[in-house]
Length: 118
Image 1 (cartoon, rainbow, N blue to C red):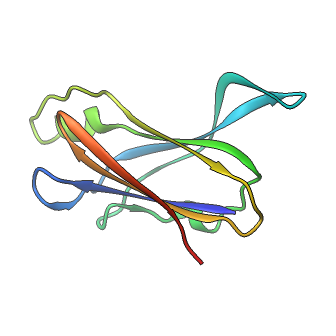
Image 2 (spheres, rainbow, N blue to C red; image 1 turned 90 degrees about the horizontal axis):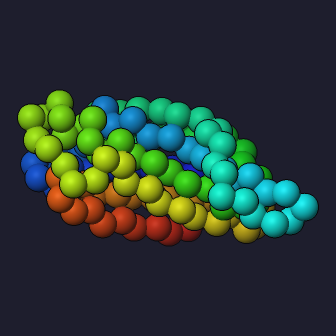
């Protein structure tokens, strides 16, 4: 199981290079999910807006959260934001799960795409 992430800047219509992204996993206790998230890894999007480091990382089943630091990204462009961070929560359920998360960022809105790939 693996996750790939991409950030797109919809203000300028280009990949959002340099966005800090955290990959977190939810802590579970005896099968019950708690509200605590633990950071598994962190990365920065490349010149094409991708985090490629996680495509080779083997992840276990369970809920994962990707946290995109939209505030810091837009601050470097001289723009303020309504959202400090954008979080996307996904659940990996099978050994062959390989999912892609794409977030389209703007200072006052965002949208996301989630899908599985072969």
